Image 1 (cartoon, rainbow, N blue to C red):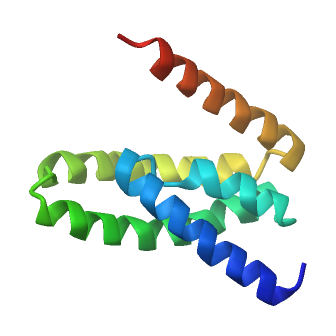
Image 2 (image 1 turned 90 degrees about the horizontal axis):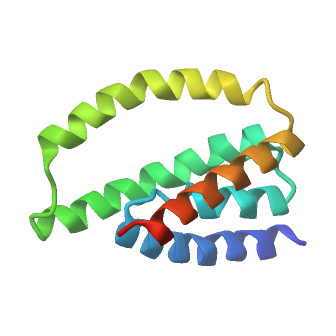
Image 3 (image 1 turned 180 degrees about the horizontal axis):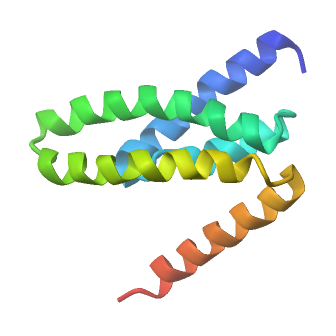
Length: 121
């Protein structure tokens, strides 16, 4: 693929992820990471790159949800404080995993979440 094609594909996919992330609150990484791996990124670079996009999408979604009074800032900040520590651990863990193993772990997590949501009452 050409650089231009990649750029257009990334912007279009970003729109899709933005809608999905703002609608579900899932952040979009579950969609972005497989796309980035498909485009040739290794697991570690796909994860890191997705966080740049997630940051931009999350700020935009926060603004939109704030206008609708759908934000509990206290709970969000407390979750974020815990997430700071978890993010540091996770970034170091992913460095130890090959892209092939990462794909399997990522798929298992997605299937587990899907099953939980599907069978939850």
